[in-house]
Image 1 (spheres, rainbow, N blue to C red):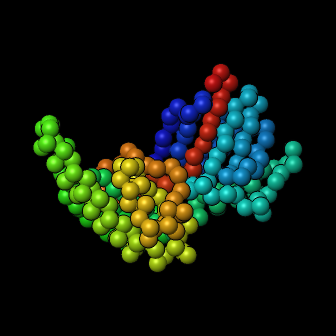
Image 2: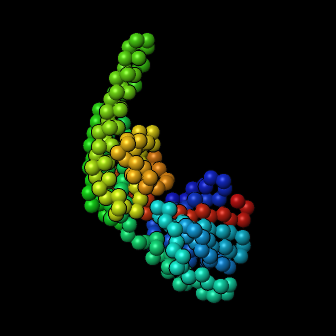
Image 3: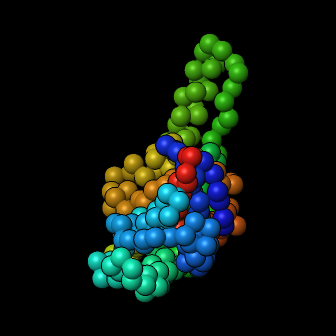
Length: 231
């Protein structure tokens, strides 16, 4: 997955696969002539002679180890780039929750490989245009159905993710944010909630097995905030 879009507050947000991260920094060097490559909490900061800056953050909010090489001015930064690339491509065990009205998917990944999952559907009545008493009755029925669906999904999340909390690096979420929040609000899922890593991926397809399997293309990406002269 590769994304290049305007970033909040200026500049560009670029998402690249972890395998391409080092190559992207090499390309940034060729285009702008990097003068320094330094360690930041979540990854690397590359500064160029023309004023361009690229901050490259590891997937899932990971922090670059304190053991990362810190080259002095004028020293080669190849070892630091290799260290970052290894950290970016490291296999991490991740839980995932996707939900939209009427369906949800829960899974566990080892790197980009889905190792266990559950996809299910639940009925939640659509909104009605009727007014008065009928509208209130439909609204109550719909609310009850939504609450029941969230509870059913929470039970599955608890069954699949809770026993693995000691193994999971993070939990990622996607789909309808409000519904996902309702599912994770279940008292049984306190540990799961605490492990959720931003961002929430709202622009995914309906919760299906194929949607779940495609999720690593998003949560494994290296996030780059690029600012160039004139931004």
